[in-house]
Amino acid sequence: MTLKLRKWDSAEYLKTEEDMVLYLEACMEEAGDDAAFIAKALGTIARARGMSQLAKDTGLGRESLYKALSGEGNPSFATILKVTHALGLKLHVHGQRKDMHKIAKIAQQITSADRSL
Image 1 (cartoon, rainbow, N blue to C red):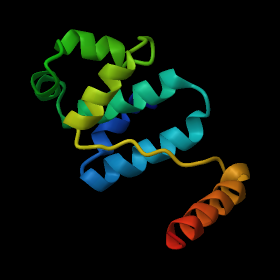
Image 2: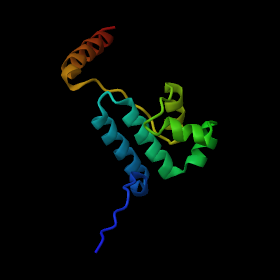
Image 3: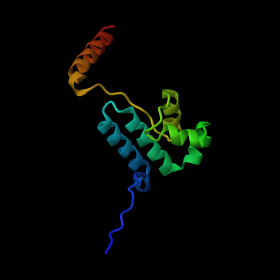
Image 4: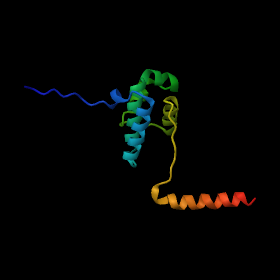
């Protein structure tokens, strides 16, 4: 008996907004410095939502989006921003854990200085 395998496609399992957000967060955590991995994760979310609609919402060509978000492309930051905006996602910046103590201390100093004004 032959076992038939099917190629895994994460886009088929991204059904809700929460699924997509958690998927992208996990990919960004896993990616490290691999920008192509993050672009491909955005491409997976885009396919789950519908690439044609994303093309309309961003004003970018559907084929250009497929290429840019394939993991093989090299999308500009402007493209990434357009895509995340059209997908209803927002990028956030957080300090690396090793710097969090330093950031918290600086924030506390600034807050204390603001209160004394």
